[in-house]
Length: 278
Image (cartoon, rainbow, N blue to C red):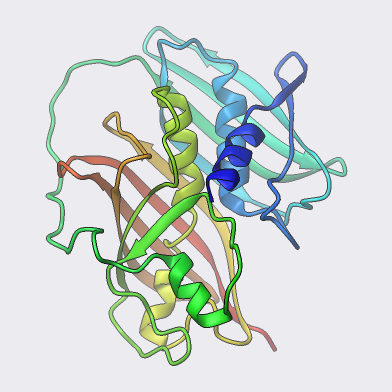
């Protein structure tokens, strides 16, 4: 698992092929398509390469348009829309075969003081003693290395073999499988990568199915991310997810991410397709 994390970090170090133009590759755990969180992380990395270190990302709004081919590099085109004194704005389009597979608008901000309040962290069991997703998958599929660079521990995991209807809420602790240094930009990339994992599948819970159920199709359409406090993704973070609505083959979920000290460090929103294959 540490090897998977090392590879993921290396994949986020994009190759600069021209001014505001970068190339990235998928990590080895991608098979039929590129995991959406990897495109998110690399998009953030491309935008960060064009922004001064005195600014850090505070919001990202993105759309997934096509499935990425893990066997082919992804080209990231960065449009430096605006450089202001307090905020810097970038637009990034990720392409393969000359067509856009993903686009994002990103806003960076200089640190500043202001009003502060946050929704309290929910009272849930800590990560100690909870089974990891890796352990759950090993139990379901047998032995093997699932090469997941982020360790997730669900507070109330679904029974993949016999899922039952439940409230459209989930709680999961997560962190990288090893330390990753002190650079905030890298921690933001890793959180972006992880944020695509449990959020949309929470919308399946009221319907008594999971993403492992036969004929269930789950595909991300858009993803938004906001940062409010510095954090470390190599220490446990709590991902609280609520799915507010599903209809017309789509579902909307929103998430809040807290550190162990109870600070709300990031917020997430995602809409995606939820379909039964015909």
